[in-house]
Length: 111
Image (cartoon, rainbow, N blue to C red; front, side, top):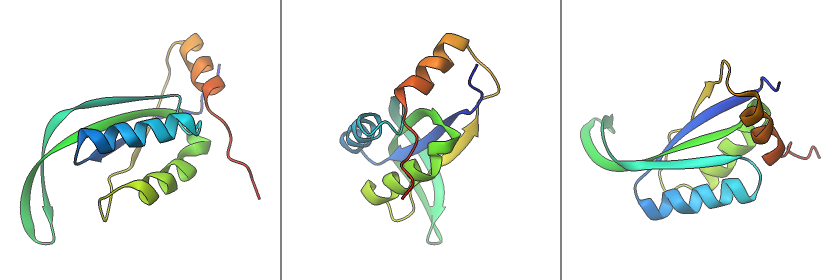
């Protein structure tokens, strides 16, 4: 069983951006699956201002080895100055699902 699975959270300001990011990450094999949740309400402080915004949450399933490349790709495509990218470890799961996740993703090429 593959034990290097992880879940990555990314928020976006619109459903269109969420869809675009999801499609890129899956088509480039940086993620096996991306789920979109939303709209959600986010409350936070940005540049000393209390903000409350509607956002969309991406729940991204991938391998730990791909998180650096995935983060770089999100930062390159995202409209936020500082996009949320949080990597959460997966402690276990269905062996067939974890194998599928592994099969759907691709190790980054080392130059």
